[in-house]
Amino acid sequence: MSATTLPIEAAPPPVTIHYRLATDADGPAIGRLFAACDYGDLGVNWARADVTQSWVVAERGGILLGAIQVFLGQPYGVIGDCVVLPQARARSDDGAGQFGRPGVVARALYGYALKALKATGAQVALGVTRKPGMMRLIGRYGGVPLGTCESFARDLTR
Image (cartoon, rainbow, N blue to C red; front, side, top):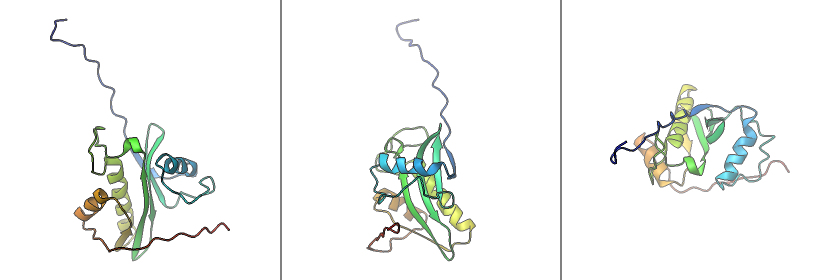
């Protein structure tokens, strides 16, 4: 080996990210995802939550990278919470960082949500975000801000 030649090990092939509807077993995993993201879940019991009807998850190598809640309906469908593990945020397909822009996981989750709403007959998709990068992305696909609004929550377990 000469002084200008360095041994290069072959990089392992990238592990594919799989997007799928949530299963019963994903409830606690989505709860752990909320906790890892320091995202408030209002004390939800994720072990009891039926996530099979309204959640799409992103998974790689058995690890949940992200999840998005989708409420199917007509004429309005709603895109709810989207959470992505901090280490998977703002990453391109090859894992490179892209500061200030939504990463491949968030973009794909929103894409799946919009396709699901359209496929089930929704005429309008509604959602909430405080993330300027996500609002710019949604704007590129025809989304418009609806102005300031208040969100609300009520604990229905009491």
